[in-house]
Image 1 (cartoon, chains in turn blue, purple):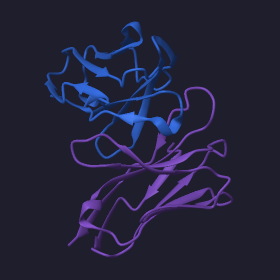
Image 2 (spheres, rainbow over the protein chains, first blue to last red):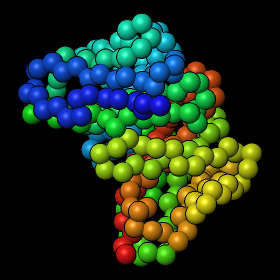
Image 3 (cartoon, chains in turn yellow, green):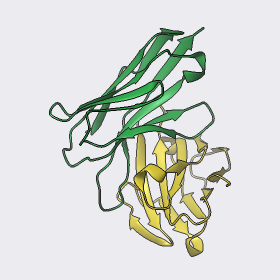
Image 4 (cartoon, each protein chain N blue to C red):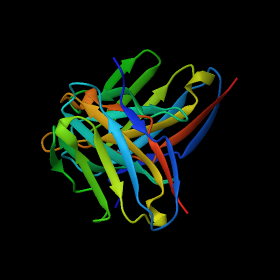
Length: 113
Length: 113
């Protein structure tokens, strides 16, 4: 079984540019989560999809962040325009439903310069 | 306001020693307490988890101790090995809603040979 795939693995962009991160969950997993870890801080929840619907986006920092999940399959997280404080590692996780079924991807390390 | 506090931030132990990581939480509605292990360049992977109806859970060399009245839980790694060198995160979540994970800041463990 393929795991959760995220790409790119690294992205370096200038302040003000746009970046799109992609996550391919494990096939059949209805739940998809985005988390972010800013250097030295805890991993923080961003949002949760069930299939194509946003169930909880209470962790999204501001309206520069837009997440979508096309047809309940892969998900994208767009940051537009990027700011310096958006730098960090963005993790995607998927599960079939149970909390102990979370599988995380390897993350995308975003650096805004 | 950090809901899950983790300590220490880093730990160095000798091979064969015991590693202990502590976490404290605020929200009494939390009912699931997992520990995640993360190697460099990888995403967090579930190591072991506990629910508040038990005070201890053991899986191999890893043991979670849970103190509901004190709102604390800890991870003990017995006979620590160099391969255990990683970052460890405690987390908590509550049933219902998105069941998102609230993480501690993480602890970098180094096991010297």
